[in-house]
Image (cartoon, rainbow, N blue to C red; front, side, top):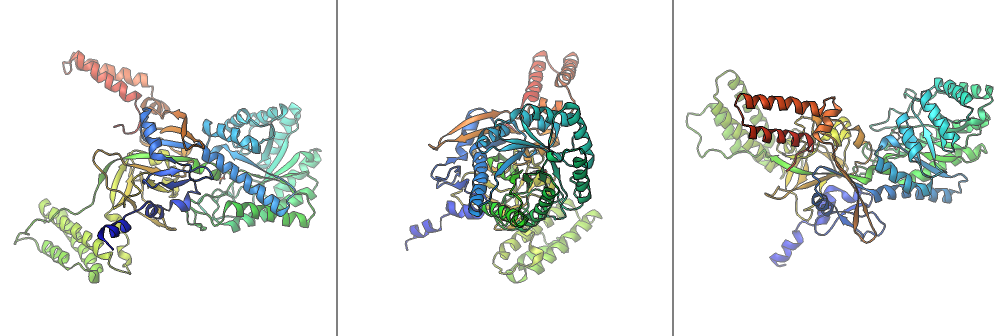
Length: 640
Ligand code: PLP
């Protein structure tokens, strides 16, 4: 084989990147890598229709918007809603289920107007409704719901105003279920219903003894905060019967928690809930609706396991299992099949948003070059370190590692006691880092790597400083160590040669991403490309459409990012459907009670004093004030 042919065969290909970053495992077919190395979005069944995310970034920059940007791809939201309904329709047909499926989107998962707008307009043909957990969310739901056959599920702790809003909505023909979460809510609902003369459709949330695994599993189990236990449920039935209102009890609801990774937990909770449903029918309640809450997971790491960032089932399996369990239990008791309701949030919107940012700078932990000769009269510890460096080989890396740590600690002790100069310490550290680099190189030749050397790669990893805030845009990554897929969105036809930890620009030691999915495991560094002078390097964090936008906070006063929504069409073109500018500095300052006008006024006084005391000229004053005003009106993130 010729040299040229060999080189071509060995060349890094987009498929190698696809394997390395697992894109085909976690993207549900919505993202892939094009031959030119760009990440592309492929929203349709016809995967030849694709749009490059790098091209979308070019379009965003041309329109005058800066990074970071939250990119919403509307087609992916539509596709997920369609998939959910198609999968249930398939299972209903396959098993001969006599009821129907309908979904409600929990507004809390992504409250942004454009998201709810898309959800209610695309979802109308499936009668997809909304779930509201607060007064504000109910107001959104009442106003935004388009389709008259869709309904609203009112969860959460409800006061009189909340109940009245729902009752008035009922009166004008908007279908609302009032889900009783706490025993005390029933009295208030009955009182307001009587006073306003409006009959409510009542639901009840139950506490299941079943619990699930995962990050967000505290919503289930006997100790869950919301829901009625069995004796409270029986009291509710008795009270409704006593008031002649048992006819209003139509819906049974439970919520096991979000991101349930194990299908066994889903089945076991549903078995328990179906038994409760069947007994409520026997008690004389009309029922008709069984609401499973949320929990349908997203495979963030693509491992298809019951690990907390993944799921050991597909959407089709979920739907089939739900139908099968309900039928098994209710058929045995000859009870009519209910309308199945799910409050799936995460799976509906996670795929549709990608956080995009650029890399601003880097730190490399490469050892500096050693001086050509070490002075004869150097301290014994320096000589020992040099000797250790000379010994490093695959056979003794563990021993050399231990020695290097020991000598380095001794050097530090001596320095603290004043027995080692700054210059000597610097030389010792340079030798130490040369040893660590040599160990990292030699360790690659070993099959079995000593456990103590596990963390050495992350010790030597580069830090890429990136233009975003973990606290604002990826709160779950910071708060619960949730894993999102992260990868460069271009250059994927080139081999990434650096191992990197990503730091944000909040200057907080927690403002970083140092956990990445890797072949079903977690690694603490991410392979990325060398940065090139005069060329921006862009990174995308995928599957961030659920929960991240509004859970984010203003740490370091980094505000909302710019948001751009695109819609891909069947020709492979795309339209910019919405562009929303992120917060300005003045916006975020006003959120924490400053008045930008007052700040400007105070600064103006200081500048004027500068003129009076002849520190600056009048012309300089004007320039300085313009800079201050530009700062107030500017983006909170780094602008080139
Ligand atoms: N329903 C209720 C009552 C919830 O509390 C939640 C969120 O935890 C959901 C639905 C949405 O869950 P998921 O996003 O897992 O579908």
